[in-house]
Length: 329
Image (cartoon, rainbow, N blue to C red; front, side, top):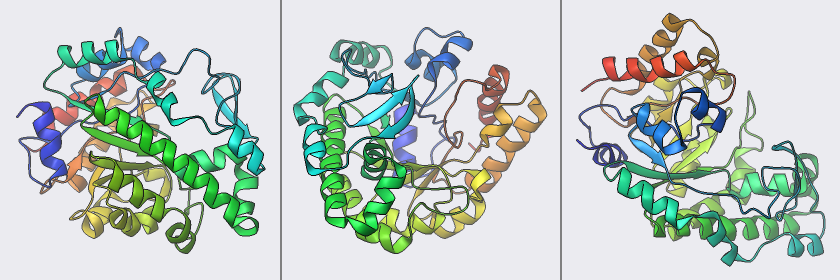
């Protein structure tokens, strides 16, 4: 099977010729450390079946850079610091026109990538889910207090960020993306950020709307202990879930038994082993994931988060090499 066929077969809950290798985010520093010229070359060079579509941050934006951005988020050295939205006027000011999405997709680079890798599965992955963009716009403490004290304002904020999310995802599909990974981080180490009841009231309707209005399969990404929210991921219509963080108590075998017939599971390789230099430990974790997730299909092999600076390059390479060696065929 070609890479795109392999991924799409799994998303249809069909058993492919082998387990797809699927990584969403690879940090630029890791791309360079591994010796690749660009992100798409890194995906292919590592043997992955997917490629991240080229995107860009507008040159005039502070988004993921430094300072206050157009969404009301403050960044320091590329790290999120706080949010400034606290009023209706703030929300109006820090809600860009939806036509702005065009500036995030460089059509020339996208066309070159698609010509260069015509048989791969193109993905778009970004942390633009309504919950994430909501709490980042207001700041964590202000947002979660507002869920109790200012629910009408929170609803308006979530609606605005959902509109943005849909516009971005629709643009991605229009340039040829096959699969979308929607980052909407909702988990702490031992529990979701909000209760299942609040999730059903405040988040599920927007997730459902995103799935309904975007004409591509959507995989939900979240770190943390999100197992109690997975029934609502199914209700929303997500085809799968990415992350499955073992450090947050996510047991791949258990999750597959409970939800594997309705959700494709992506990830669960412990990023902590990739920060170490013991390749035997890396191979052991690869074996664990394959044993717990691959049987019967419905699983794509990936780290539980991303490939980031500080990981040992040889451990990354060995993870995918060994997965290909032992993966069911």
